Image (tube, rainbow, N blue to C red):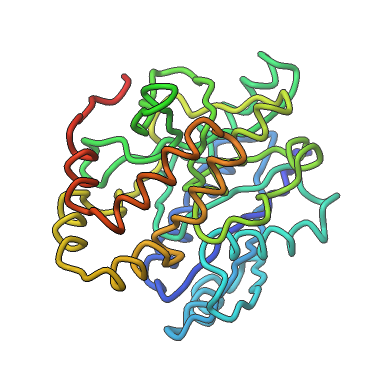
Amino acid sequence: MKKTYNIAVIITCFNRCRLTVESLKALYLSRDNYNNAHKEEELALTLFLTDDGCTDGTAETVLATFPGEEINIVKGDGSLYWAGGMRKAWKAAMEEYARWHFYILLNDDTQCMPEALGILMDTQKQLQKMHGMEGIVSGVCQSPDGKTITYGAEYYTRPLIGKSLIMHPTGKPEPCYRTNANLVLVASNVVSTIGMFDDGFIHSCADWAYGIKACKAGLPVYITPVACAICDNDHGNVSDEGEKVMKMNLSERKAFFSHPLRATSDKLLFMKRYYKEKYLILLFARTLAVYMPSLYYRLLLARPLKPKK
């Protein structure tokens, strides 16, 4: 008899219907590949999707596109943003807590490679051998052309004034600290120990904090040995942003940097909780960006660094 792993898939969306559907198609294809390749075990996915006030018919399209799948739509009013939407879907899944062996955290612009769930599950099994427990496995993502590693986990190049760079896969599971939740497999023992994303984060940084919180609790947190998903880096170019910001007046800059999508408040909260030595530096930098943007972007672009291999 096959061993069934019950997995809750956590995802939130806002008016990206096509991307959301393509992401789920890739996820279910990876699930099918895994189940076809394993005679003694199978993955059973249940989707919890926060529709945060979508006006493009995302929820209806998802339900119509995947009629045979177990799908739960959680409604939002458009004010949740990413972190809030993920918490809302995760909270709905945890009402059936005893059912889940794992949770998948998925961004709706991330496409699993066909072998993705196999890589994530194999890495969890390696953690069990190495640490005597499962943990968090963050799937490394690459750009569509395969030339750039875009997400997985990040690190600071220097303790105090360091830039944040992406970890690159090495062919074996590597411990990490600050995770990106583009494609993450979270074991149930992690959730029983530290719960879900922290309250307080509106749009970003909740995934960074989650990896750090798990590490501090003594749980294994790793990236996959190889890239297993495709996701373009959509956070924009710093030079282009600088040109845009320097054309704004003071009130426009204040509105730009205080918008939830800019995530200034999230980043300040993150630093205050987890990198206290960086908090005042970030606060100063954000103040500089509003009142002296030319100096801010000149300093920001001064020291380009190569990522860790």
